[in-house]
Amino acid sequence: MYTSWFLILTYIILIPVCVESAPYNPAGRTEFMSALVSDKVYYYAGYDDGITRFNDFFYIDLTQPFSSFSPQFQFIKSLDTRTSATAVSHANKIYVFGGDFFNVPDTKTPLVEFFQIQSLSTDPVISYIPDTPSTPSARKWHTSVINHVNEKIYVWGGVKEIGLVMNYTFLNSTLNDGNMYIFDIALSIWTSNPSQQQPNGRCLHTATFLPDGRIIMIGGATNSDVGKLDVYDTKTNEWSNIIATKNGTIPPIIHHSATLLHDNQSIIIYGGSNQIGYSGLAVLNISNYMWTVISPTGNAPPIISSGHEATLYSDIIIFAFGESIFNTTRRVITPVIRLLNISNSQYRWVDSYTPPPILNQNQNPSKQNPTTQNPSNQNPSTQNPNTQTSNNSNKFIIIGSVIAGLVILVILVIWYILYKKNQNANIVKIPGSSNGIMNNKNNVLRIPGSSNEEMKSYMI
Image 1 (cartoon, helix red, strand yellow):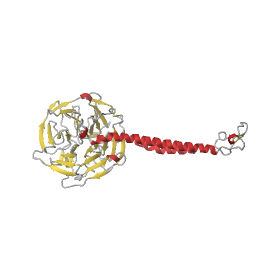
Image 2 (cartoon, rainbow, N blue to C red):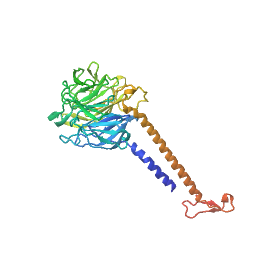
Image 3 (cartoon, rainbow, N blue to C red):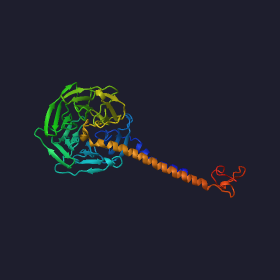
Image 4 (cartoon, helix red, strand yellow):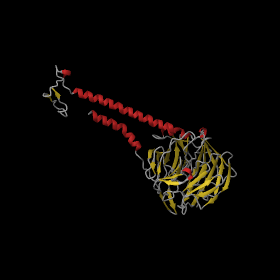
């Protein structure tokens, strides 16, 4: 009986661990959100190639190896349904702005919602920031980037509501204005900085924040030529139009990703809609505004995706989910993860991810995507605050493992004591014998009703 209780208690203790480690198999999707917090990439919502909207919130742990064919996603919980929004992370929170709840015309979603990282792995908390007179109008297909030094989020472009056909021809569309909207995290207020030089707004473009304070807008449905760049200076509130040269043929780019590399001088774009006769990858040299088409080695993805998210961590860019669009045909991408190794400026597609070795104080794995820019190679005073929680997370794992081990040890001790007590209760002591028990092998007392009379027999 005591053995059965011991097994039951052990099962109760260990089953949460087994459940937590069971991989999650999310559906393919596009127009979802992602954010890197510490050493986990969190993914949220989106929709498939039909009309199904998602509300799942899950992550992939970058301290653990995985294959692009079987990534180890972990589900956290379901939140509200949302697509076509943007996400940035800062100080252990994820800020999600705008988007579309149910594709309802003129749905007003000009809210920033954030999740507390302290409870993110168990029960994420959403806190809505109330609208103010300076809150941007409702929009989707815009961009958001963050400056971690001044703790400000910059939102630009997008559309208010659209009539859309599959080749991204807009009918009765309303582009948002070209104002740059700024959210001050410390003060929790919005401001708008209109400028005489500001360009027309874009949508389905990318925005890349540079360490010097500039934001570079690339591509988009209303300005898809990568040779025409709009650049915003966050320090002076001034816009400039840059004409970039192309070394190779780059088709119009819509719904792609843009990633700032570790040298802070190179932006790599990937994917987009209707990408034919092209590797899907090009690098912009920021110092001379020169584009170069690259063709990585390795097994390239069979389909170039659009509407995906890109995460740079160490020397790997993780391209997650997305869809393919050719004319009026669209479908979500499989496998859901593609991995590009960029070490030593030798671009190559790989099938597996291996966590980087322990980094020293001056190194910082970073994540760049169209909505979140975390400059790498920063000094400790300007590092992304999200990286400061990595060591704490590891400590919590170790402490939790030690506590679980101690609990199991206590149960083992209690079980052993009860087991011995039960054994002694079945011993029949005979007066006058040594230790109360005779050692006469020829006389055996069998206890009626015992589960095994031979094992519960005693010498008499």
